[in-house]
Length: 254
Length: 290
Image 1: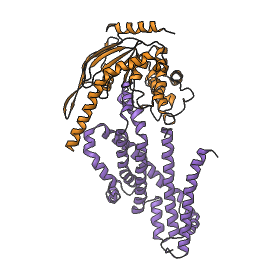
Image 2: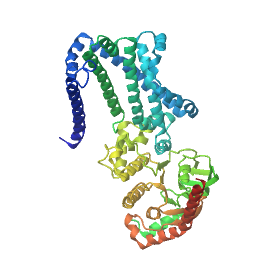
Image 3: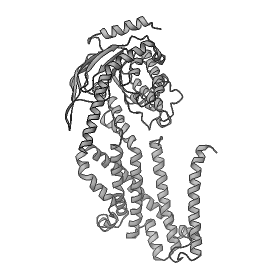
Image 4: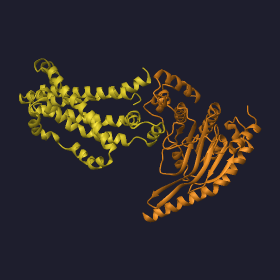
């Protein structure tokens, strides 16, 4: 095994090992009665319920719906967030006037506005997408501004010395320089988006994994509920793999 | 190999060339900044010319306006009095004939060495195969062949400065403008990179203007050294360096080299002392305020 492969494998094995130890400890504590098994099911029960949930609850269709809602909202927060971030970076007055509001929006519990979105978009996937969009947008805007503002002056001067047009300066220097910071914003935004997508699916009982969690919880099928939550985590993992892949493709040196 | 006599003659010729033959003319340039403490004259009525193929070093103490002058000539700073001309053409803003190498590390970390060097050619719209081929020549020129696919993070500080140099040279500027390009490097690397600069300058007959506060660097590289005063930055003296060419860093151990260093230091010492006193006065004033 090469040194580079070992550098990657050791942290992965350590993380997986820690997870297994946690699961094992939970199993032992629940079996021993230290944790109430009517509140938290045993990990072995959750594992055993996966097959049932997959076969009986149309998990593939629900996974696809939640993924598509989160993906659509994710694309929207990326495109709109970067554009708004760029606008606020370029127009200092607009930035001074709105940056605090954007930061306030980032910490606001927008999920509570779901009745308003239901009125506007109806009981449809668009309500869920738009709720995810509103929740995930502020970090992308803020991190885009931070990334563009943090571009080292000398790199901009290099561009100016080569007589770059404003568009070339953005595409060839500002954007690639800001990309790592923008991706931090996109990842944060995706977390907020996914939480809100699943949360609103749960609240309005409309399709997807959120609705399944609601259904299973109401049926008091705790192992099934936790199994459904595991699938939400899987959606999140898939998103992070995709963003990492896109970042490496856009900026191989990262 | 040029003899000492021919080199001396070349240096004398260079100094004798007037504005009509100059590739770069700085004509009565002044720049003032408005600061909270009042107006600050950074550059005061500077005039000089640079001949084709000449290596001119501008030296002065920290804070004398060298970098302001660099930015004015490079077209990155406007709002100044006077005139800059390149081959008789008045410059306003960045000019294609002037290539700039900056003091700070300025490679693009997201591009490989070859992509960094090919950058100006990409901007010029050159087809990919052609620009990579041309960039390869400049990578070789600065001695980085074998590192084309590496990213700047995988290189040393000196190698990264050579990438910046190759990138600027790839745009084939008539005038190479360098602002203390080796300031962040250790002395040994600085001397060796000086050799590389000399070799490239002689190979390409590249007109070069070096801004520096390092006396040995200026004497090692330049045909003429323009000494600036401390605030306001004015022209104090022009010293012709009549050391033989081609030069290498070995010249620093020669007696003549030592004499030039001593001569320039005697010019600079008073200015550097003023700068130091000024700095201490400002710090004391700051302490009183706080």
